[in-house]
Image (cartoon, rainbow, N blue to C red; front, top):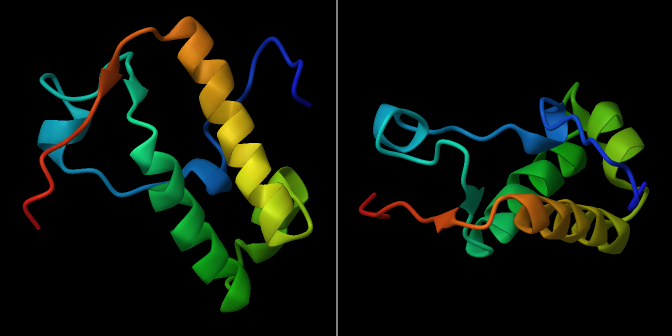
Length: 95
């Protein structure tokens, strides 16, 4: 998986809520998120897995059978994105 030339990011493991400002014209665009968002993505995924949400099986199947594997998966995807998307973005966290 780590050497895949293309990674489909439109999967359940990569779903996050984003406001219009962050997701729209002045936000992330084609930039890699700041590395701090990797943990922000990991935590909701773990919550969904622990709560036996219907997305649980999909997240496990694509990211790993245990928490350490899932953290490694997310970090590897971040590292791959960082190689092709040189600029990063970080939203103001006023909420």
